[in-house]
Length: 331
Image (cartoon, rainbow, N blue to C red):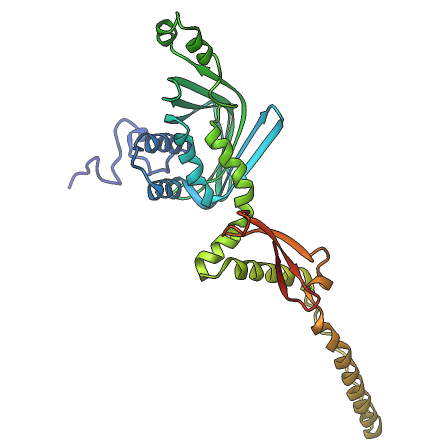
């Protein structure tokens, strides 16, 4: 039986370069291309389930997304977790954007044991705005991505540092309103701040409050507890971690020969040991009555945000710890 090119032991007469190579994983930049294609398939009817599926496809369960830029009042840096990432992308389109894609140029890849890092110093986030006017916004900066080195190759960390942005208006629109000074004045104003819409900026500011509350929301969803019980449980576990003694390193037992003692000395030692144990138990008794405020300094009044509005419509109130260790709510 003659060998064919489909035979794994087939030797090509043109050299070894014409053999079939082993399968390889998708390049990291191709994953960004796939993400752009998925964003283009978005429709106006895309709900939260669609955005959750989008984030699950391209982001790890413990992924983080960080944006760094400088506004008029100083530099800003926002970091959100995996549960808030779907909502971040949806706010981009809620601000009047009809198309969103990323362009990576001259990116550098570095391979590690369990991850792949992509560093692109010339990254451009391009958004097409349909309202309030037809404008194309190019936001340029540095994008650093960390992918997991597996078959899924999902994003673990996303860090986009914005340097500059440009808003482009077609000349045809300027020619149509050349005789209208009010429209020209409106066209000359920026519709974004550092390439981000007001919807996205307001959401990032809200994430500063939502991100620390993720533990409370997750516990409320998992165990179906009330917001007050969720806060008590989280505070109690945090208090346990603070007062728990550090783990001591294991010591090797010493092999020493014990000396034989007479009955009189053993009897006196046993009675002394009994007295010592009773004394030690008496000393340990007050430790069980310590409350939270005595062990954790500054825990007397802990401000927090409730999942339900208070009497005055505010989300934030405080929980006080009484001397007996009880939680008391203060509005």
